[in-house]
Length: 580
Ligand code: DGT
Ligand code: CA
Ligand code: CA
Ligand code: ZN
Image (cartoon, helix red, strand yellow):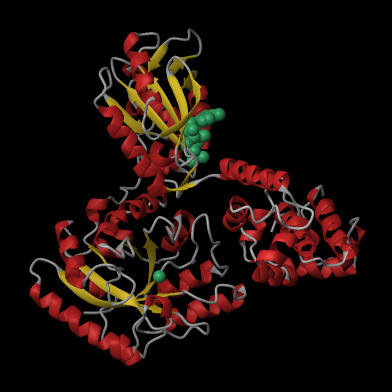
């Protein structure tokens, strides 16, 4: 933990204590410690074992030394954990609303037992905050405005939401006179797991600034039926907000400089900076208009990304790699990996049916997968611990296997494996009998409960699940829900190493809210010898298409076909899982 992280956690704890109405002396001690650590000129990690040095820091007493060590040992504090459990994690976000201090949060909590952004917004809209003591209509309006502002600045969107919004706009603009191509750039093109705003680039003969056609194209953008408000408008660009709140930046570019603009607006910023530095060393400057010679400002190339990379002595890099994580060196050496593509995937082995919380039958899922060109699927419904999903017990699981085998008999051209997504219970044991799991072709073991265990306990729990000889895949291994729930903490390195040894594959769950493992963990897992399986976790036939979001994350982690087991034909896939 760095100083910033510690300061943040201490100040969170102070706020939580204040919401809970604890004594002001105690609250003050957390705040003081937070402020002085935040402005410390050296890393506290370096002196964490040294009582004397710690006590020399102003605002740090004996009790706080204990708290600091607790944070280093387990990444959190007892008081913080307890209060977060009471109010829910959403309370931390709620603190960031302007006009909503700890006292008001406490007031709302006492009256309504609500302490999250969506809940408070609902109460305010229903006029249930103005009636609280010391509040009123004005205070309620102020809270609503604060919530709206916060959503605007912190507003990021799941990748499928952004992708679908971009596709709709691209379709609307495609047939416009003077337009040749409409392409999303920015974080969406790079396949980042969440998207801040859409960057849409338009090129074609009509995109010459000042021309009638250019004006007409901009007018068409402004009249997009799903647009809520125009934020800025210029000769060759326009920014607007969609009804969903998402911002869209549209730029019109002449074909001669389209490549330079694509490169610039795809980013990432750090990749662009690295490219510019490289250009300068060659006496060149790179901008969104092209690559120019420094000495006479003459344009060298600008039409395609490919040309620009070549002139810089590099080969074209897939947008998913453009994060300045070493891709320039690989490109220069001509050793860019051949990234996995959706076409490489031969089967999807995580999906649910009407037997539990899915919406379609085994046969419907199989037909959809076959239509998609897959050679195999696995039906992996939930186990009984997930009661709200009507999870299967041993008896129902065995009956389900029979149904899956019968469906497999009926289908030509696609194999239907019998599988299960079995819960990893709090102690690391699996939710169904070994004798039942042995009958399955694919056993995905997943955590769906008790997320708040200590990192040590969670690590042990995952290691125990991996050690079960029936486990073939660790499902959505970190349990995060993007924009909603943090990953649980555990020793990822230890888990990946054990999984590699026991030939348990790591899942990359393509569900846009999960995308778990993420790019960084995927790379780490593969480097430690793990294999990956890319699944959709489909609950409906339409969800099979979400595999594209998993593929993007895999590409961001530089994965190739050989890293991913479900690129193998059916028989080899089973063999790689230690089955068949
Ligand atoms: P987002 O929207 O937060 O998900 O992330 P991006 O990457 O789409 O960022 P955005 O929309 O602010 O800008 C789009 C691209 O434009 C970005 O990836 C790189 C480029 N860009 C924007 N501002 C700058 C800048 O100040 N310097 C450089 N080199 N590039 C920039
Ligand atoms: Ca963007
Ligand atoms: Ca932007
Ligand atoms: Zn699951």
